[in-house]
Length: 503
Picture: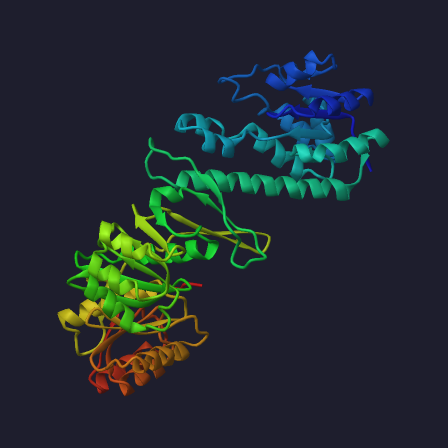
């Protein structure tokens, strides 16, 4: 057990601090503070010492630097080692047993201010440093990082002002979690715009539920910057994931021709590029008209009345387009729950985050798009210009499909796909089976894999089904086996050198 004899208090939110300080004072705990917190506590008539008197250094830079001083951080980080005790005496560093700090309200600043400068000013430096220092030294220091922890501390102070290490360790865990969450919000804000002067407010949108009805869900970000919902029921958690998957694939397809996509469970199951949007829709639907039921439809051009009439025959969840003719909208709005979305812009996120274990995984967005210059022909036969175009499209579709995956494209149309398989052979067999099921001729089709073939079995299966054009990243120690088989059987294969795992 360790008795609290001194405390440093620096808080933005002054609620409930009066009660805490009074109990500290009643127990003869020496209190240090600075700035507005000092003035507030001093006006209560509670004895308190200025941090500036301890450090003999004034608050500077408009209050941004107050507690960042060796006498403060030395007092917090000091241990019971002989060297620490010696140096503390030598430099007149006090022992600080309790740190009570909250952080500048950065998230509230993002929500309530249009000024980038004001938001940046709310990035806490001293407070976060104090929290981290006190939490690191939890063996000797109590770290109170939230107003919600006051009552627990007050109950201890009413007893004998002594804390045990399990309590201090629990507070340290909560403090580092708070620090991590705080930094994540700052990172999210800075990644949401690549401009130094034009920043938008993040909003928190409560969703009907999460992935399943028993899970709560919410969206935090700038949803209205990406699209406008013009009809239908409230958008759900799963809807947003599907919308993101659909428009991110659309973003990678650089063409002036008409593109139509159909997604299901974040995976493309229909795709076609044609000279007009109606033909693109019909050919995308023919890829897999079973999976299209309840799917997400996306295109890169305005929906006209004729296309709307065809789409109206299908039960779908969401339709995304850059615009709609008035007559098309009248047809499409005939079902009240259909979600109709007008696409305004594409996401510009640079980072991708997800929870993992007791923390967060973060990575750069996979923004690599294969170009012809990336392709290295490794077989004797090179693909023709039209086949190269199909191989590029197949690569892009594979990039946006759950691993392990195979995408088969012919004449700018997806004719077979296998996704989310634990074996690449299973993904290939699934793609071939689906293609044949919907009546496609695999002869002269082009195949893409999101990762390399570890053995030659996939090219052998492809050849047996008349698929003679392949793109894969390459990089297997047995690449030559696949190359030799292709050369022996008149197949063409290119290596992209780019893997697109999607877990």
